[in-house]
Length: 267
Image (cartoon, rainbow, N blue to C red; front, side, top):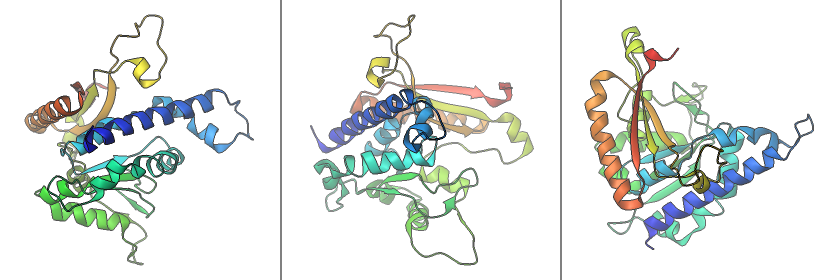
């Protein structure tokens, strides 16, 4: 097994195992004011989307950065300190892919954001950023991406600013999202939600419960990523999806599916 396949497989396995352990902890703990924070905070873990698809996109060289965020900062920090840092980042395959000496080296980094920084939509402090220096170097907006990473992790900060902000357009470039949030009132009513799903998983693969009406072998779609777009961006979104679909199918066997919904139809 090569480094890229090992990193993908080990991440999938570790993420699923951690989610199962947290879900089991939450389900066996009686809610009370004296409940340990690890169990009371983690009750929503079964409802959150997995990040293995985003990691596959990164490892396939499709996107320069991945932002890992679970429903609460406690969950995200737990995943970083209990899974990523002591397990995934200690693998020999990860250590080799941290290097940048050879043409095929990804130049991987994985860090917890501790700085008080946000996008216009959300705080980034407490999230985890994983990035590939090789993908950044080859990106047409490499300088912008590198400046954003420096902002996220540099120790310097202007005392006159209470908080650092990364523009939403810049976040879209960093995370390779081919859409945008509405910029006018008209665009608010035109917004569409794009989502990519893995069609190939089963409930038993994810450690989930199988309902009485669902066969264990029936594939259950798994949400991998979602973003907003405008109607004029749909052609580029379709091209983006096709590129992602073909790459992760051939490299990792992920069966990527596309879904689009007009948010004007959502009450």
